Length: 100
Image 1 (cartoon, rainbow, N blue to C red):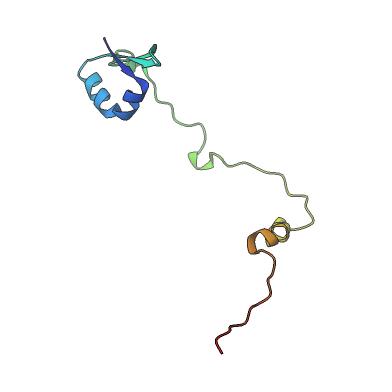
Image 2: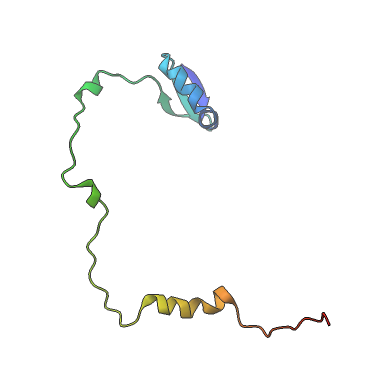
């Protein structure tokens, strides 16, 4: 079995995956320490996989019911006040053109 460093594997992943498809196996080394084996998968166990349909509508995934806000002021108004100096800077006096 050949060895490959993590950096080499990252930079040439497509090449190593083609080699694995052809039946080769590699030991992946991180700082000269073996950390993983890269090789062809065994398709025997793949037939045992079962696809399950989602239990709820995927359109609702990530939708969260939030409690009502208890603020008496609009949060955007507060943010505008706080960020006014930062975003626009202090107002400077206008300089007149000397193009006379």
